[in-house]
Image 1 (spheres, helix red, strand yellow):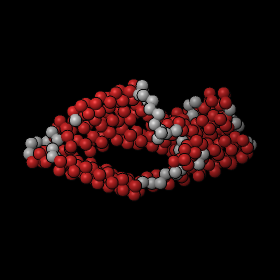
Image 2 (cartoon, rainbow, N blue to C red):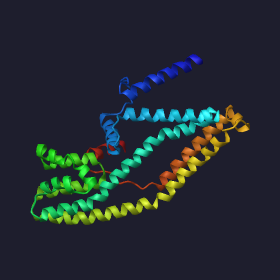
Image 3 (tube, rainbow, N blue to C red):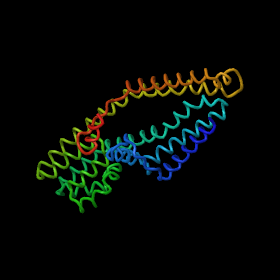
Length: 298
């Protein structure tokens, strides 16, 4: 048994070091996902502002979870008590960067009305739509300046439409998809239709953002409650096992293992149910490679 445990720890350390350094062995597993899905995970990390590969990110999450498990084990003296807190802490990096990604994309969405007004002013002043977009990358709202930072160079190298398509794929959210598709249409039509389309687009985008804010506010309280219900019982459990006594003795036994596993399962199921009830159904992409990926996964 000790030999098997030592072998498992050695294999785990080998893979962990490989994932962290980016030199993990390439295992030809049948269930390995396609390149499009891998690029989707990398795009997710890019949108969250994480300069890591997916393997490095998950290896770091596992390392953080293992550290939390070890800390709780040292404090309580009962390794079983640290299982669920360790798993929860391992999930924290993804939750944190998911919120960060959502916040960054939300800033871009909220900046579109002002950005479109800037475009409309530039077009009304006699500039072409491509010139107005180049100006947006320099003087537009800060979130859009970051999103369109590469647009001037891409437009000179590839043209306006391919440059807009690249920006659309980097943003990869439904609101930006609609806006950029209309900008592509306006560029192709040209003339007076550009101003008309931009006018309609400003009004429609403003209404969409207002609706999204209302939906987000409605589900906030339920999301907070679901997280509190998940965390508080385990904080109490850790507190009960800090000192020697019947609680620590029980959670070192096989009966304690059953209780911890059952409690962890019930907590996870309860959290998923409440989170699903509070979740706002995000709009699916219908343009770009992200739409193709979503269709394959559904």
